[in-house]
Amino acid sequence: MRERWSAWRCAALGALAALVCLASSARPAAQPAPMRGDGAGMVGWLAERPDLDSDWDDWGHAVLIGVSGGVYWTEHLRTAIDFTWSDDTDLSVARQVPAAGLSWAPLAYSEWDIGHTQIGVGQHYQFFSNTWVHPYVGGGVLIDWERRSSYTPRQAFPIDWRPGSDPGTWVVVAEESRTGPDTRVVARPFFEGGAKVYVSERAFFRAELRWVARDTQQLATRFGVGVDW
Image 1 (spheres, rainbow, N blue to C red):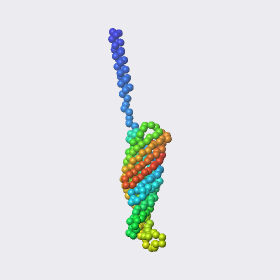
Image 2 (image 1 turned 180 degrees about the horizontal axis):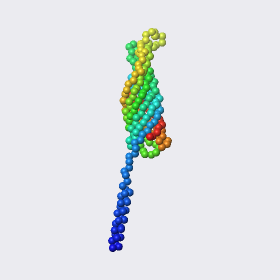
Image 3 (image 1 turned 90 degrees about the horizontal axis):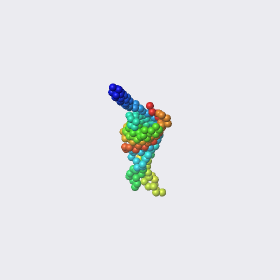
Image 4 (image 1 turned 90 degrees about the vertical axis):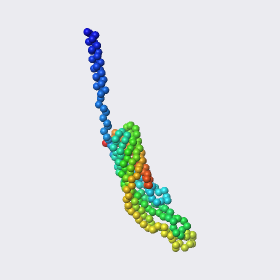
């Protein structure tokens, strides 16, 4: 009888131990991390080669400012939107103009002012899972409200440049004219890469480089500070 009681007691203790193990292992499933985002202000420098009829490889430069925000869907995937405004880029554009009476094709030049108001929407992939530095790459579409105006002075050249020749005969290759300001809206793809460097748990410094291609070429270097929320 005592042996049977001992057997039942061992079985009960074994069943109790099994229940304790099952209860400890049946923890609730981990909840997904709440959606989070960030926002930042930016300043930078824009270099661009616009799609103008020119015989020179003309690049203009302008200061830009902007704001950006993003939403993290996972630890590494972020959808971003930014608003950017640039100062006017000043460009001297020259092209060869064939002229009757001249044995050579002179260069006629124009002065252009080009500015931008842009909205960019893109997707980023953020590398690593550390605390301080988060490099990322991304791409998207840039909607560009491009402002353009130009001025062309009157330009003429003498037929005969020889010393002592009669300079009275000149050939006009360009008349004085002005255009704009005009605004056109263009959608262009962009690619970018950069890094977020945290200076506290939520505050960060951001540096990035953006390249825009399609007719006009743009290279924007941007720096900013922001916070996570």
